[in-house]
Image 1 (cartoon, rainbow, N blue to C red):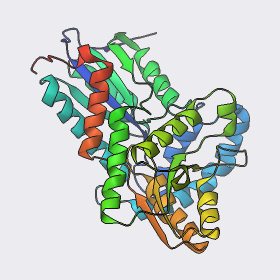
Image 2 (image 1 turned 120 degrees about the horizontal axis):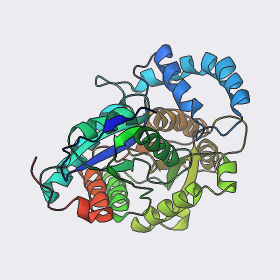
Image 3 (image 1 turned 90 degrees about the vertical axis):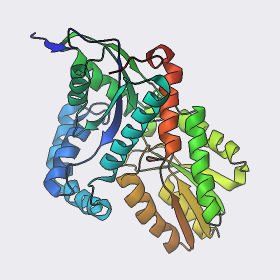
Image 4 (image 1 turned 180 degrees about the horizontal axis):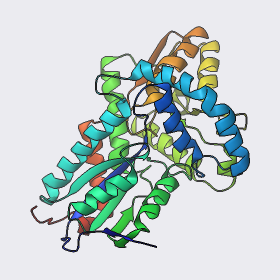
Length: 344
């Protein structure tokens, strides 16, 4: 095997940080969405089926039908700066770097990558290596650990580093579902929304779903979602009747984590609930699953079932509390890496 250089031979005692989000198509077009879904759905971590069976389904059915429908959905949220997930992750990255350098001295380099699409994990790691760092902290932007998300970032980092000759010290943050700064930022975002709007009768705390069999086989994701939701409700001083945990974005016919967000919203409206607030703490920044699926599609489901007032509380995005929380998370987990950094 021919190894690439990896770190610079003259790398100094500096820290690099890599924030990794899920990914986004390059454009809201059918070909771009097909390329993105092809990479995403080929990941063994995402779909744990026999490859020959799954490839027949993926290429014979899904990638022929779904890209056009998904492209239409992306077109409803695409802005002047492009994909919301991309632009918001970029702004969050800048905020985290500013926070790390403000208190730890100059010298921390922070960049971002997408697990699927561009900029790739490989490209981002090569960029950090070329900047002269000798240690890299990787922060997957998934507060709750799942084999289908966080573990895939581990895979991508390992697949890149196994081809390097000069390796960095490496640390991957596994999860931060109960980190105080993260929970405080979530609570502040809800309280800020309530300061300008009448609170709904129920706070729906919606997380991205995963297949039920993953939980049955030991994935801790559901437990961590439950812990995050309960901690957020406690910070907001909510009674058990004032909030509910749900799971969205299921795919296929197999059972996924329940209760389902869309079915829950429909049921709440049918039972007489007239107003709800919905927050999605598992997403670091807003994306298709929040802006289109929740704020548009699920809002329609609630109103069609008899509900009246539906309010979506945005993700933490580039809020100052969010970037500060992630910077504090890194400093607390790796204090020696983020103190007394030398100047560039």
